[in-house]
Length: 198
Image (spheres, one colour):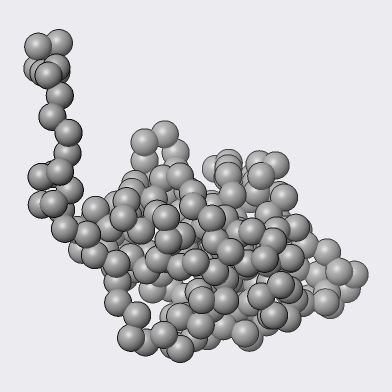
């Protein structure tokens, strides 16, 4: 079966969307990640496999191929763990694939399915909004940063299980995380140095 999930990566001070495509097939058990992944991304197969099993989901027994598109841009870091896991679960029918196009997902997975924070949530939120994406699913620790982008619905998650339940409509009352921009700037520190003097 095939599934398609949206994620994102940073490139300098900007971000770009990444399509996480997963195909499951019969054959010897193996997870292959293609699309110019670095070593951290390649290692995600081990984290994702353990996280799915330890979250009481079914991991496919055959061959799993994950493509990170566009394939001509190098993918770095551990932020693809969560979207890869969600894509694998969607390809095996454990997640409703109809809602996946509405969200961009980022997050590193622990072996027990806990979601760890990642870098670049702010610029990823900016890029997702520019592309007309409805919402952003992020680690709980990244929610405040991502919510600084006006007009973006940010949903903080703590575990893979919580994310799957949300995507399957089991947390319909879950509200997007909100931050008061005025309070953020009102509480900022004042510095004696004026950069206009530079």
